[in-house]
Every structure is written in C-alpha cells, then in structure tokens.
Image 1: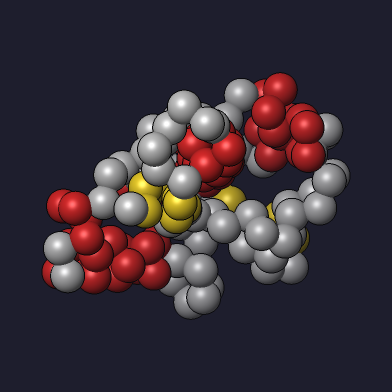
Image 2: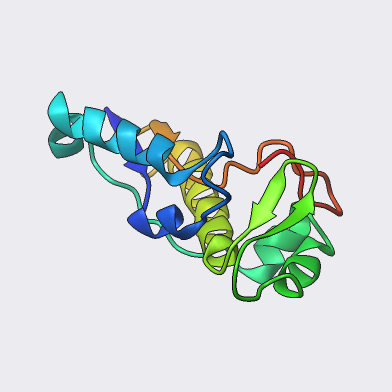
Length: 134
C-alpha cells in the first residue's frame, strides 16, 4: 500500500497564473485519486513543516534568504521561481512531508514501505544556497 503525503495548504503557493507549476496541477492529481477511490484506500502520511535544522542539512542558508522574500503579492526570486505570501509555508510543508516519507519507508517498525509525496512547490531543482526550478 502506498502512503500518500499531501496537504491542501500547499495550494497557497501561488505563482503567476501563466506559470506551469501552479495549484491546479496538485488539485487535479488529488481529484483523480478521489475519483478512482485511492484517496479513501491509501493511508495518509503526516505532513508537518520541516524544521530549520532539517532544511539546513541540504540548504544551509536558503531558509533565511527565503524568509527575507516573504511579503504581500507575488515576486520572482529566480528565473523559474516565484514566491507568494503562502510559498514559504507551502515549501516547509513540502519538505516536512518528504522528511516524514523517508522516515516511513526507512523505518523497520512501520508496515508501509512505499510513499508518494504530492507536494508543491516541488523544489526538485533547488541548489544548496538557492531556490531554483519552481
């Protein structure tokens, strides 16, 4: 069984409507899982904000830089990366979900060994000291 890690609070990361990574992508996936019944049969994982210490393991200075970018409105912070008022919380939730998923699949005490993180912003191109790629 696949444990699904997701949270509707991640929809609050709102880049411009024309950006390819937008809330509707996650909403469509969640609707499809509900439509085919998987949202009722797959267990859900714990989603929490990653701690500053957890973020610093991979991105030692990024959290401070992102905190400085939080303000009303939407602003571009990198060629493909935008921040809105809800982006920092969404990013911390996404990172925390991944930490929890890794803990789940590596723990010998848990029965579920498969996890899917349906998170945004995806963060898959972030570099140690900067946001990048959505």
